[in-house]
Image 1 (cartoon, rainbow, N blue to C red):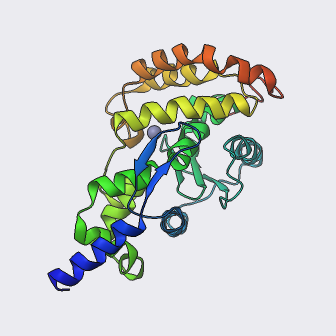
Image 2: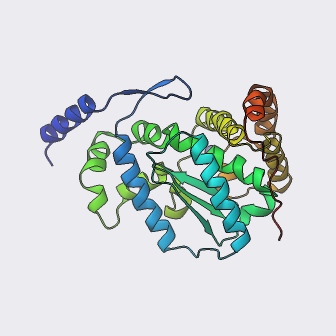
Length: 265
Ligand SMILES: [Zn+2]
């Protein structure tokens, strides 16, 4: 593709994309792709991950995941998302939510979550990354002009390419494609804060959130992607503890499910 054509398309893109304000934080950010395009990429990446994964048939864990998923998605006030919650049978201690509301939890993280509220804390955090459009922000920040153009036109149609790998990585699927592009620390703190709010709004005891990081911390030794790309467990635990007083009034107005059910091994 010639340079001027690329430049023309890029200019058009910039004109079409706009400064978006997040209703939950009131913060403005410039994002190069639309929410619809983000959701399309999210759905495609989700199918790709699911096709390569083994789903867990644990009825009890799946039931909790669906219940927590429903409550957190309602608390996130995004009825326009095509929500989906799947439990993947894998020792990985991880979870993700792709743009548009495609959520996966790996069974390896269940012992660390310990109970339903623990799952609500992690899903709240991952969902917050999606509702805050951190993937779109990261995509905008990380990809150059040419890649920005490719995002819209060609990448979805490509079988496999470095560009596609980078985009999937930007969407949060780094581990699957062998490239890890971490969210920034600012994004992580923001997802922790809004995730805690979602959890409390959904009726789950917010005191359970810092406890997960305590359990993570006890296991942390050059661990998986979730750990190595995120701020240290200790600092997250501390920050979450400080934020709890802010969400307690929200929790008190909620149906108050407490910690919910405990996960049995
Ligand atoms: Zn995160």
